[in-house]
Length: 191
Image: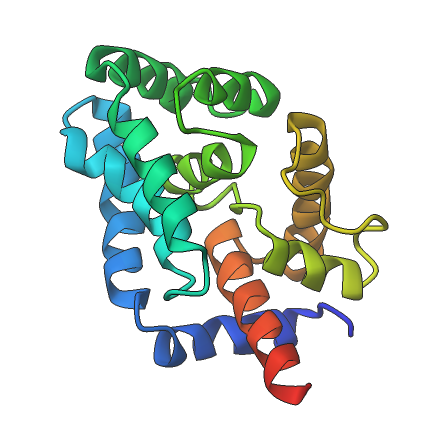
């Protein structure tokens, strides 16, 4: 499989028609970057990102594990969450440092931290998961199998692969994310 501009754009368009969470995701892509940067948000806005990371699997993610992570995240001091997201939203180009700050929060590993980056800067970051990683690997953009869970350094490798594809195809990260998710779905449908 080759990740050409035509393939990426077509699959991203399919995402809007095929994925049931698209409308709410698009709303959050539109509002959360400014909301996080301005510091005017509540617990539910922040918790939504953690919930989204697991619930976008539509039941395919182990429910007990998802609930434990969501509960652990809720236990964070909200002022600490505000401080962390405020810093990350202002310094989002420092990927490794942003991930490290986010993973200092309870219930946030590198994968969930990458989801925060995706909603802090949807034009720049793609949330990492096994599905998007597998598609990039099948396209020859990554060599190693998905590391479960990925480290900060492994996310940086994933991010570099995403940036190469974005540069080559002229799309932003939100478009690439949607395309990768649909390409994985097409791979499963074809199997």
